[in-house]
Image (tube, rainbow, N blue to C red):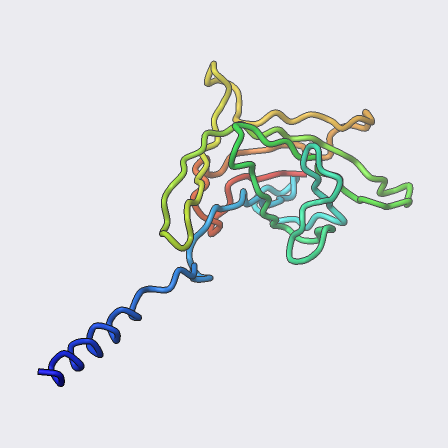
Length: 179
């Protein structure tokens, strides 16, 4: 009888420690960022690298980090949208920090308008937020407002187009900017 109770206790204790860890796997899909690809305005099928682009969110002092840097030299960038708001505004400053007269800094501002959807991922990972870019209430305007920066130096972005209005992952381009 004692052996049976002892075996039963050992059996119970061995299964009590088999509880799933509350660790979110690094491969779990989390809240996606808005993926922007830059194109040549004169040849719209060719991706074009931006030079010393920095992107600063409204009310922020520091620029958005992309691959560990705040200056972007490439044709694609991913930026975070606010999860607790319906709009996010960014300053896109091309040639940031340049003193070259031929390539002076030029700032454009884009306000993104969107709806959010919170999705439960797991107990360990919590929720993620997906976004849907939305036009204004009239449904005739694009889901963003593009303006020139504080210094009126003409917009460096010639054309902005929504490629995919549903932002559920970072595997595709959501916005195309032609310059």
